[in-house]
Image 1: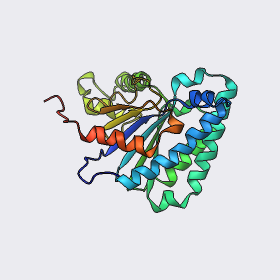
Image 2: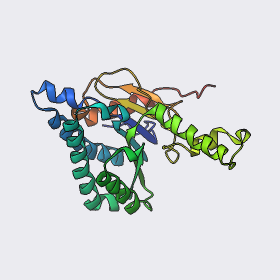
Image 3: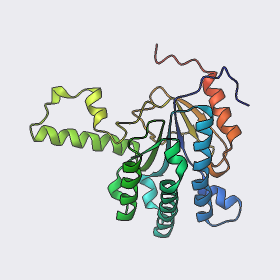
Length: 238
């Protein structure tokens, strides 16, 4: 039961970690963990709607994940493609006005995945009730480096001068430019690190670390994270 006086975060980011270890604990192949992790996404969207959360960002595939075996990467892409197509056909996406936004270097993905991403963003671009951001092909340091490269290129072309660079201008060149500041970051699987997740957007975020692997993360765990967030006094450096 969620208390009425809880302070609900507007934007939650989740580092969805532990699919492979979840599969190993059950003696299953790693694909099983990825499939169960994908199913968890739909549950979390439901929890957000129920609790009145406006924005959710899930880190589902990092730049480092590309170093995994070709077989595992292709399987992950196939699972992602299947779920993306299901979302496109799901009437609840349109009834609930869920807007998709992908964050990362999308050029790293095969053409069929890039096309699906474009479809998901295009078909939901006018939706206004809930922002669902997916960090894929994402690395925190790489995001900052790529933004710096874009700005440097504009300076080379004479479109900008170095004195024009501000926090606002730099942010506008980042993958996550359109993503609001994160209030609460949840990391599953018991790892106590941020791994560079949305570094620009999480400077004043609260963190909650769960021992549960992503596929076994429950609504009770989700509510516990929000209760922890609500109990903290956010000073914003003051």
